[in-house]
Amino acid sequence: MRLAFQLSYDGNQFRGSQLQPAYRTVEGELITACQRVQLFDDPCKAGFALAGRTDRGVHARGQVGAFSTPFPERAVEALNGQLSPDLWCNGFAEVPPSFHPRFDAISRTYRYFFADWPLDIRAMDQAAAALIGTHDFSRLARVREKSPIRTVKSARVFQDRGIPVFEVTAHTYLWHMVRCMAAALLLIGTHEREPELMERLLSGKCRRNPPAAPADGLVLWDVDCGVTFTPTEPDPRSRDWIGSARREAMVRERIIGLLDRSGVDRRGKEPGDDSGRDLL
Amino acid sequence: MRLAFQLSYDGNQFRGSQLQPAYRTVEGELITACQRVQLFDDPCKAGFALAGRTDRGVHARGQVGAFSTPFPERAVEALNGQLSPDLWCNGFAEVPPSFHPRFDAISRTYRYFFADWPLDIRAMDQAAAALIGTHDFSRLARVREKSPIRTVKSARVFQDRGIPVFEVTAHTYLWHMVRCMAAALLLIGTHEREPELMERLLSGKCRRNPPAAPADGLVLWDVDCGVTFTPTEPDPRSRDWIGSARREAMVRERIIGLLDRSGVDRRGKEPGDDSGRDLL
Figure (cartoon, rainbow over the protein chains, first blue to last red):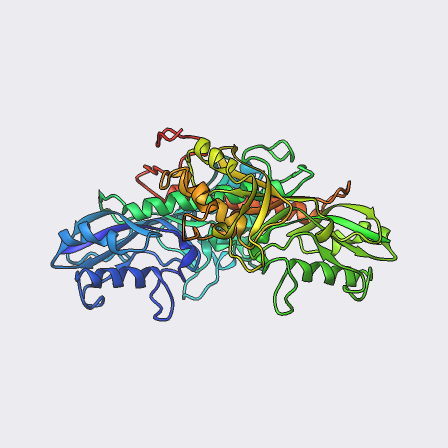
């Protein structure tokens, strides 16, 4: 039976999603776990594949993958127990034998979380709207493929608990495309550049690409393959790991804030508190 | 003139405080910065010293140091500008020529921030009270010195914005002593061990030491050398760095929380929200 799965992972401790024999990768972890519970021996023969490639440090909330196995029940029951706590399956679905997550993906949605605020959310959202449609993204990507033309279905900037977030949906992307778009939006959000920067980048009037924004703000948010997944619970070890990683981040935030004895931390204020900079 | 200074640093990117030629250390950074602005050439001749040794990863909010220099005004004006943004002086004071921060320290206060909650704060605080006084701390330290006897002046456990914190004040400590005390308190706070564990460790009835708690929760909070410091502003680069490091931690906390699609993160709840575990 061919089985699709929906996958979350923290990108911190992975050298990206794609298999590289000498490094810890998302594909490497998954294949080893599948082999350990004998879902398949040969990942190529099992048609093992992921929908989206993610670079080193990039996270995923809704990555999609698939493989063929004679033991689908065992996959659903045992796979999460064999994975490291920083990646886990959220759901499984039976799919047709021809299903390939990469080629059958209708769209991929990314979210970029900016570790910088306050930002001019309105200007960023307006600039993001300029991305929608079919454009030459040469100046907003590292182009290796033949065609730099891509179609963005939707793009917006909003705040999530005060954190500025860029969300973009497209069928496929060029390399570093989301992180370059995020970098351009950040320049607009800090008023270092005018909102027209985006149109200039899309029309080729800017010669230089903005350097890609850091990987750790990027999340592969969702992949639409037209598949409805039956939800699975993460392993309790993953639950513990998630709670622990969150608490560690909270403690770090608190300690760093306390190191400044003067207490006049002008830029480390609560997210959403825009009082310091009159940008909105 | 002999000059004392009060110092903060984020321990993350340092191999501890003590000078090690091949590594980035707090002393190494400070000495290089002092030499660059020509406060002294030879740190030994200048009597350069810090009050407390901190291990790799341990932070400081109120470390104290001293050196002799013919140019005290230049130190106050220029030193922060020469330091990396993750360490900075909070204040300076003129001290007698014989002043030595290590030997003249009356007491050192540490705070340990636990990345684990909810915890039984009351049981931990009661156990912490047992630490006060003069005891053999062999079972709560890695003993290398001749005498394992130390005197704890005060010890308490409380919550800081919901984060459990252990605060302890003593004249001097054994190696890993604060982190071993924190580890024992954590076992009591999670109810893995009875509050009597602490007295058993102090009386030598327990044979095994609890393994030291992780370094990144520990902050050298204050050193009392009987000196009153005139406050100095951190360099703007340090201010930016503090804000940026705090925002990065906030974004990480948010992303990790969002990776769990089921949203039933039982242990990653807001600090201080004790609803899940009826420990208090």
